[in-house]
Length: 318
Image (cartoon, rainbow, N blue to C red; front, side):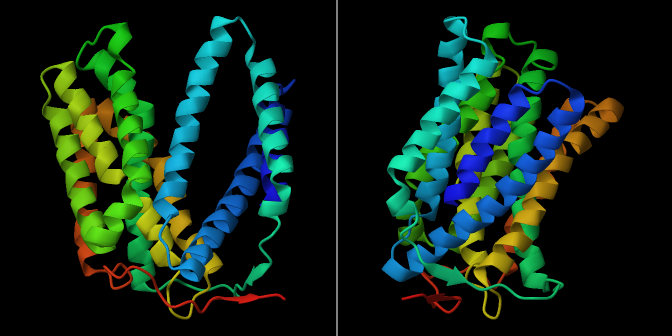
């Protein structure tokens, strides 16, 4: 992870300052590979630490991820207000991140646990595919909110320019608040109930957006989607790391693959349907998908209301 974050910083600098398309595409490709591998390592480590210390903090870690996106957006606004180019911005931010990593390198490198993964390809079982499906739906919802909320406000609700980003802003704020408080809720309510209720709340949010006659009601719908989706992925990642007979690395990789498929293909599917039937009807697909996610979560044996799972997927090097 220590090296992964530093490599990601250099790759994103290369993306923003790429001198030609080939260099831009290459940096994007490498960024995708490294970020996926680093993400699996980070979430596997968080899951391992949860079991070691018998304490939930996966949702809080994801909340910090959401908070980082909010902070970076605010920094971009401030930098552009100061007429600082995007190429200089990314160098400054990346340098700050590398400095923080370097100053905390002893803490990051203190973990000497080895997480084992299999040596051959495996076809996931139906319950694992269920987790992957729920992750796909959650990432699909996030991707569609990010890519289509502003367009929906502008073209369907005819919102003023000052309001077109408020749907995504409300969604992001709800995601951050929900995740930072998610571990406490998970301890009290349970993972299965959170995923089922969250999926149904997200479905209600999409229904509110689709039927909203005015912008304010649509914003409320996006806030509901944010609160609904906020703890689903942390629960799925925790569950995928505690599957009997499957290492946490393999579990995360299987489930995350579904999420990436949803994040990449979801917005495109919505765009295709909107060309044929309109954006409102296209977004209605997500109502059906989130309800299906709730049903799958209800039937999935790997999502339980237990606080932690047995620790059996790592050994510690002395």
